[in-house]
Image (spheres, rainbow over the protein chains, first blue to last red):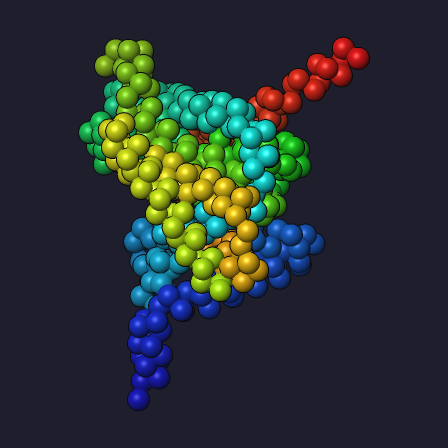
Length: 256
Length: 123
């Protein structure tokens, strides 16, 4: 009578429900830890960091790329933390957003989208060149990774970049997303990130939907819909500009 | 009923992603362009112009309250090993782009508010 095996089988067959239980524990841990550290409102930020640490440990242990979802009894995380639920939940946060606030920030939001995509791309491409990458395809792909971790591989795929370079672009994008989640609540008061307009500008400049949503959720959940709204257009704009206009400019500058 | 709220979010999601996919096809990009953003705009219109009863609203609020836990779950499924192993170029490209963008937030937030500042000075 192998009790462990019986339990593991039950959990594996109900993995989504298991992920509800585990996330609940992570949230409790996050709020308890941040209360210990003195600032209870960082509870969700700490929970997110706990998630990232668990993803790191799981990745090293399983060699997979999906964090703890690669562990069989936690495979439900692939659904709970996957694109479908993420998109569904982000959309629901728009309920109750004030349409007057949106109109006020409209122009600033659009400007910040273009500034954000192009600026991140330029920074990424500049580091690629500084580290010795010479072909326009490689430089563009890495620059695209600095836009978001989706724009990177999409651009690399469109331009035929090698999988090593695509992996680098994903890494750059994940670094951006993770840093954004962690830094936002800490820096928010110093950059005036406390109203819908600045949240929309923030979403347009940083653009990583997971990073912006995670970062704002840990700062002030009421700002999430405003930031997420501009951020969701960012990836689309990046996928549009990077493999086309931006690639042509990089190629003209590098001559390759 | 609460499920009506869940259904409304779903309807907005499908319409938004559908429109976003059409944009993407027209522009020659794969996936969808701003589909989730369009869905959010639809839900904003619904919440500002259509009266929903309390239970339906509760359904929508339940999903919004699940939002942070879903982000926590998403964090736990990231390829953090890859992020750290990308080495310096990945870390610098992603890191500096992020940090520098934060500095631009207060600058761009002033767009649209500039009118009030100059009016104040004239007075």
